[in-house]
Length: 128
Image (cartoon, rainbow, N blue to C red; front, side):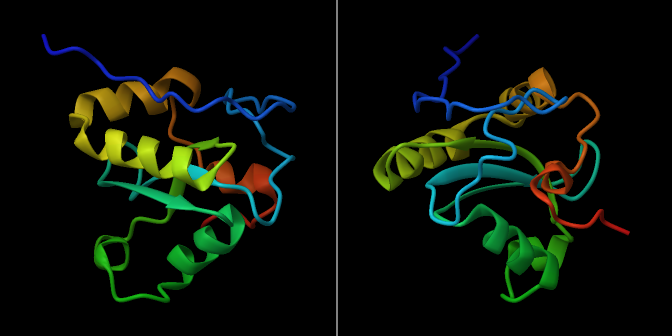
């Protein structure tokens, strides 16, 4: 089995959400972050990076860009991790994009076994 690469960015200190994601409730407007979106439970995945997680989630939900996420209905935030710098977040994003699907699935399910939309805990309305 190939070596499983792990993200190396430091976790944002803060309260833990029931799904075990650090930083919930502490998301600043401009905080580098790497995230995984899904189309639904065990659905199509998208790995991204941003400095404004809430703003980027809203863009995905609103279908602002004619993109992969819009075409595949990928709008559920299932995993995210804050980084100290954008460089660290981009490095982690690139690493995660190379991971096999099963590795990403394991990363998600370690703290979010039911693939709940974590954006709700950040103050966004639930998906309909």
